[in-house]
Image 1 (spheres, one colour):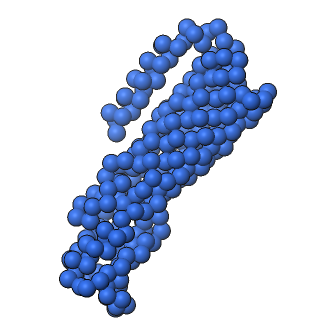
Image 2: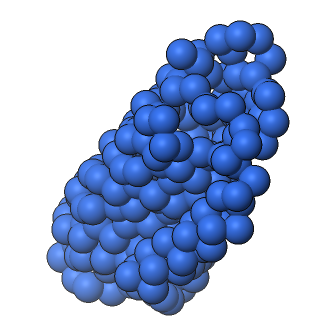
Image 3: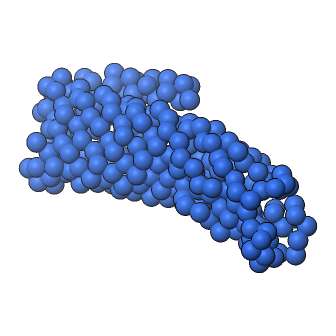
Length: 242
């Protein structure tokens, strides 16, 4: 994770140096508060759907929605925050069902998802803005803070036998998370602007997973999940400038 942090900071510093001379001749940017929403695309082990790989998280591309705001100083630097909900959904129920069917040597099995994969994020950090014209500006940011994550559970039904039902309970965990990216802001009115942001995000919560009705350890059995939840967010938004 530290490698991604240093890479993101280096990229932001490079953009700052290359654009600073251009930005000096533009008007100061305005502070703003806004609402954003878009696509959240996780990557890595979190999105794998391999029954035999305990690192698989069975998460899918989902949606994000949140509140954002930043106060800019005359220098172009600012302090801002972001509160978002990222829902990743669940994929791979059939792969799980097929795996349990083989592991328990039964004729049929069904898996039903319990809960969802998602995160609640509260992040704060520095911003830097480059005015690119009278109405257009570029906002760079590196944010860090609290990520409260939920890992979906499941219930497994073997041959429609209620007594043979078992499952993995949904679980939650909190961890430090960071997000770094850039966005364009275009003023469509004196106090109204449209936002377009792309960010890399990452956190690594340590889930303690409980299981129910597992008298034997046959089949896939997860008691801990400690893999990165990382990927790319792409958001559109609207903001009030002041």
